[in-house]
Image 1 (cartoon, rainbow, N blue to C red):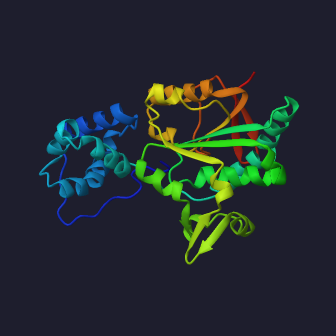
Image 2 (image 1 turned 30 degrees about the vertical axis):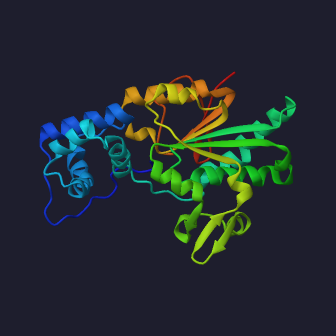
Image 3 (image 1 turned 45 degrees about the vertical axis):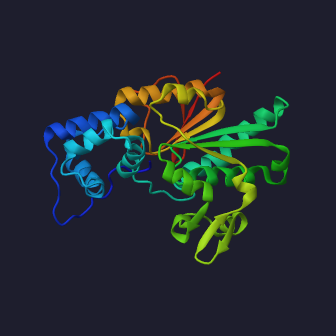
Length: 292
């Protein structure tokens, strides 16, 4: 869910959405997954859904709304709707300054705390994982920090997204060179197997990541995620309204163990959303800590 409505679809004869149809669909989307679509994005919703109407042979957006409510295939179409309204554009090692802080400061601190407690376990939650680049990047960084010692650690990175299609892609772990455009060359050589033009994540890295579908609006689903030392939720909450942001951030707070860390997108902020976390300023990044 890294960027929403970043592109429009060009159609020869575009279908037009009425104000009432837009209101109905916007409310439906918000009710189902918490994504809020502002009035000034009406035309983007129109463009994004036009192909679905053509595919289903529906004449207008009112019929599409009715389809989502009552058709026997509405559950499958809801998944398609979620895919259409979210653009899963991401890459490995995205936002290097933030990941450098994670690798050099946050993760070593957590590892040392675990060692002092006599524990060798690490739980990281990647919420809104898209096609898997973020959780696999976190697995690589954990491997880089722990090196050979990683074999004696119990590490689990829980990676969730709303879309079944992107999760299916993530589980395969096969990527193009474009997805690796911000990845150091030595990391690519160490953690990927090249097969023609594609790069496949090595099996030992895949074992560290568990993928599953999760709707951030579903409070009961949120409670099922194993408690974590670190939560990554980057470029997700900017698409929620303040009420939804507060609900999600509170869920992350509840999930984190005392002293755990929340890492959100570099353009996102908890200002006016939550005072439960202590912001820690690093060069190029702000990390939020759940104080003991």
